[in-house]
Image (cartoon, rainbow, N blue to C red):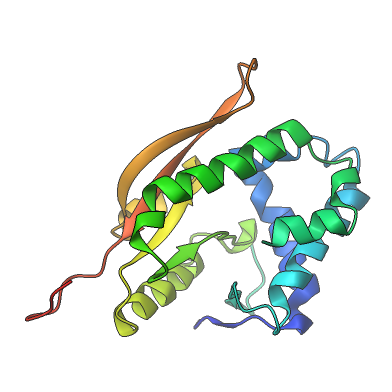
Length: 205
């Protein structure tokens, strides 16, 4: 199954994938612990975010999709403008700490490389379709773009859920950081990881 560009028509399917898959990742529970109490908010604002990402006029993000026909056995600010601060499914202190922590970590570990990189923000595969190579396929698409476009790297803030996959694909850990609200014991750990394409013979940086 080859990745293809996500389209506005994919909005409902992409929203469904995110809502059903991301709770497997510790950072989702950290930010949205009340999603079961307020499922309508969780759906509404998740859908709103990806409506923005899938809009062809918004070219800061690229959403890639892999479809499997077999049956299984800046954007944050924009959502806030449209009512996101009132969402009841989120722990807003955790959400803000996560957002600010991601920005600080990105600036520290990836910012010095400049714009010549691809940053992987979200990778999700429906639970019933995992272990079929779809996540790897999406990552390899980005890794190939890095090589073809002569970019410097592909970067990701890896949660425990994705760390093993990225390591297996050849990403290296360049830093570890913690997301924690001051005064709280609860925290999550993320790893800054990079894939750097092999140097071609005669190539220089």
